[in-house]
Length: 429
Ligand code: AMP
Ligand code: MG
Image 1 (cartoon, protein in one colour):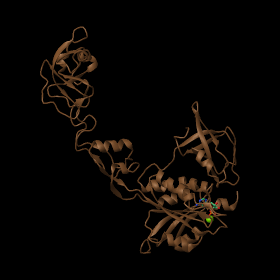
Image 2 (cartoon, rainbow, N blue to C red):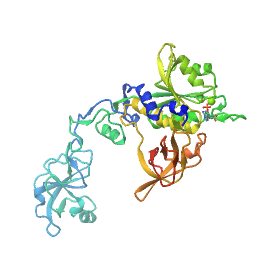
Image 3 (cartoon, rainbow, N blue to C red):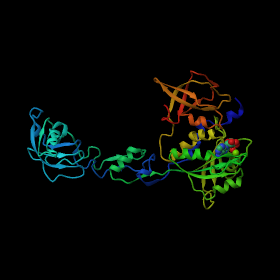
Image 4 (cartoon, protein in one colour):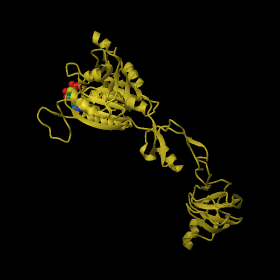
């Protein structure tokens, strides 16, 4: 293992340095549908009972339970039907002994009634078949007890109760709960704004034709997609050539929570991003003991806001190779974004799998290999999705996980147990 490898920092050290630089962002009030995946910044209390009134869980007849005593299909108890109540309206009548009110699911239980007999447990269908309209008398064919088929007021949420607590992540069910309380907005930790800048004289943006010698800028888009996926707001700054001036020009007037650059961090190349960090800010680290993605850089850069004052902004310099970009984003940018959003769990799920291919680890770095994980019987199996070159993006698209080969393991053989960082549960697992 070379001197150089040992001087690089580990994934954990790099992550620690990155996370130390970020705090949870401020709260803002947002429309409930705009805050999926965001973290609640207030305890939410209910000002109402949900449901607001006792209501029927079934289509049927609202009765006094005592009026069904002894009823069965041989000996129905006959009640006089005095009204029909639909969901959303309230009956003006009261259910008195010997009477009933036809009731639809969700309709408020009329005064006097304490239970609902389902249509199926009455002779409603027969009578309607012959009369063609709601019957004036109904036979109850089954006993009920008070409370049967009644949803109690406040059975879901009671007035005054704390329904959702601070730090809850908003998912679809929380959106539904907020709506059921009549809340149209809620306070959440705001989403971080992430500027994305691609460096490289060889790059052409996707809306242009491709001249000889050039390649399309794909990194900006995979990074922007990842930023969106983890809840941030991407701000695409486009492509700059490999010069300090063009890079700094893009930073001028920029007010963001994180700047991500791609390219310009490898040895022998221009070392552009690194130089800028050294001159205009501070390099926190450069080079991590990983494969792919070794040349990743992190630091802060000064003087990039409107007044060109000394405000400093965090800058994560990802490598140029498209796979390295995605892997280092998952390892370093994603946790930073999640921390800013107030999330507590910054890790991707990890599973143990049986490896079906071999992976060589030649130089003591931690390898993150693109793989597909499948569950067969009760075990997970992982196999590589294709060539592992850091410039070859298609195996990343076929992968649902990254197989991790530890620094000190020179070779993974078929049959070895490996740890897999799951990127996407939905794909085939
Ligand atoms: P660099 O780290 O700048 O030397 O970039 C390494 C390699 O990554 C380059 O030779 C390009 O092939 C590729 N690359 C760099 N930036 C991009 C980009 N924005 N989109 C696609 N490929 C890129
Ligand atoms: Mg470059």
